[in-house]
Length: 510
Image (cartoon, rainbow, N blue to C red; front, side):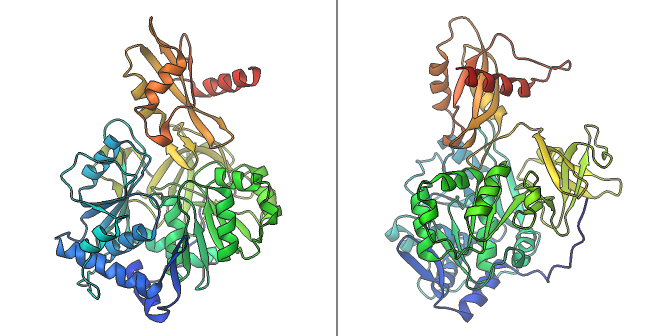
């Protein structure tokens, strides 16, 4: 199913758009972090100094830099300065292990690593600049007033490399081109962004979830407020009220915590124009509660970091469709295919595949994984496979049924069970393991493991502690249970649905 697209305006770089806003409104607030504020003029000048420093250090267009750390003004400016130099930015997750982070930096080919104190020392030859050390960063930046040499950035050049989670081998680096980001920001009016918008962001800048709000907000000359530290509902609500926030992007578990806050209804949130949600299953009842109690519209995005097809649900316009993820976005072609790669008839269930002007180029240095993620129709058009299973209703709204890949989405982070299973199998007492997502009041979902053990195995909690020491913060197991044999289909596939049901039944009985 597809929705016709109006033509995009001619390609422009986000860096050029930023420069124009800075010239037109140099004193307008661009970035806010706690008590700190920088104007558009200051942000543009800093981006120039970053770009000039990268050029001074020999970082060439289409090469990469890596950034890892907590959200902050320096993080945002380094990202923008890298783009101005035509350099691809690899924003790396701070929740990854030391080995994972080092592997991502190597895989990206980053010439420089910008990191804060939350990032451990890494075994790398890549120069590291402390972005949270004002003296160190100022010493690295080009002198005040420096201008970068102009770079003729092309739509197919890499804009950023966003890494999937991974524990074994090299995580997949999703390469998103400038053309993909331009498609996002060129239609920013759909999100009702404007020059007076104030977008409050409480998810990491390493996540595509955040970037799909960050860049459209800046593209319209608005203000971006960056929340600091772990998500705190009270701090978020206070900041939103103080800054008169108009837009926000949150994952479902954050909405859940906010709506459950005992003083939620005492805050003045009347300034909100639009709220966005993506990255995880979004319960219909929670959507309804937000519509009732939080002013402004609510838009849910369904899609992948890899791009392809995106569905949009304007929940405020379709309160009877809250159980769906909406209709295909303008210019997006979404279809459903069976296990043999054939399109299914209308009304039937199939795997979701999508095509649009916003698609990743490839998985960085992983052509095999790229081919696995692609599907081509009879005319040779390239689609991205989601691994999700769903069906369209009679009105063209997509209802998701399950996730074929069995990916666990915890607090907005994608967790791949195979990575966790591989770690468990490294223990000498583990004969087999299967990881599934179980309900979590705090995170929406958490990973848990069913394990077949050999004689002399430790207690389940001891095995869980052993595994969690080897996993990233966002990957840690919520529980481990032992089982004599994993249930499998006739062709040998583990029946994870049964395992999830058994876990839930056991939790209810205990």
